[in-house]
Image (cartoon, rainbow, N blue to C red; front, side, top):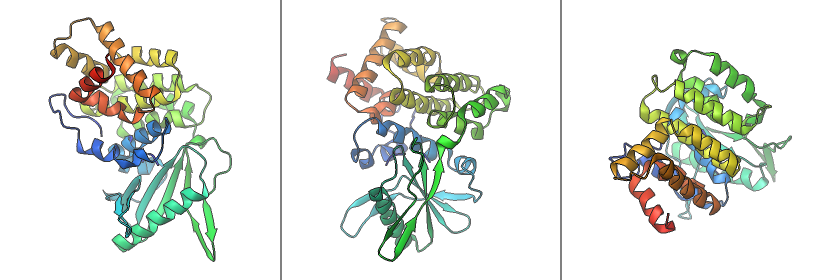
Length: 313
């Protein structure tokens, strides 16, 4: 697929040119399986999952405690690489396998999940339960498939069943000093939930909450959170709405990071002009369905400069 449980590990200090290991894992072959903006959602979700791990498991209503995140690359007997979205070893000895779907679940998806699960059982010699986290608006989702005498089923978690408006209001009412990592999970996933507010409003509210949390969370953590929201903005919003998000982002840690880096390189054309340059690059990547590169573009200075040259920006 595709991605939560990211959204998404994507940031190094700007002095370090190499891409962080977490970024390399998230941007691997999995993103070549599908074209289009659905990759952006997957990227964001995987970042959240990699960064929040145990907290997200609890927020999803799963009470067992995570012991560790297990490798998700499975080398099959046919020398094929199979990439699960996320795999956790739990305290109860069961491995919880997570897949993320933004569309309806097809028979092909279920057969693929079953293949992942069977390979994981063989490798770890332990039971495996597959959870599929869905952001689809489809009313009825397929959760099982029968082939011959065998029925395979997964456990569904529907984000659309959760009320983003109510959750965001509760988080907003908390004092800045009371914000926790657990509060941030519904904040970051609010664009995928149900509710009355437009996605633009949810993303803007999320950015505003993160600004209040800048004194609580480490800077690099806030950058990761802001990048997740910005990835959703690119996926769901039109150019005019993205412009509003960019304005709000300008004074965030992520926006400041981009600006500071430009100043260090001697780019003194003014903050507005540099912001527009970066915005043109983001739009170019979006037009070419390369939204999976957004986080790397924001966090890797050398890579961003190479793209400026490539597109003549």
